[in-house]
Length: 66
Image (cartoon, rainbow, N blue to C red; front, side, top):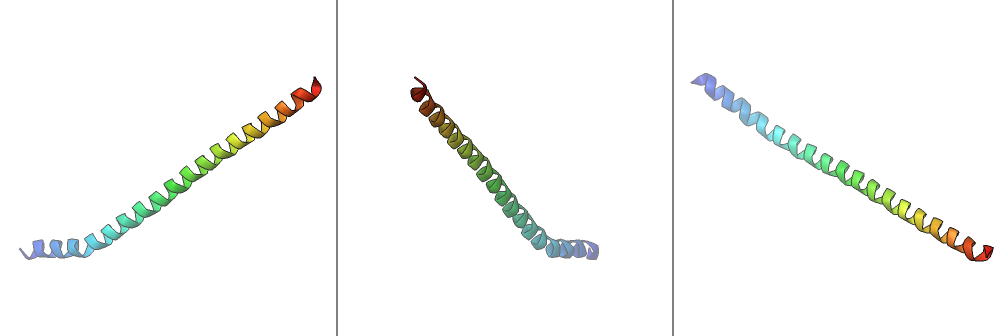
């Protein structure tokens, strides 16, 4: 019976640390995912802006050549 008490004491000592470690892991993972999503969105926005600029440049050249 004393051995089981020791196991419970060890678990009682480790569970809070494991819980904090899990929360830290989840927070860091959320930050990394948010950063990745933001970089993807910015890349899409830059590509869309570049396409608009390219379209505007080509439309300006067309009327002047006719």
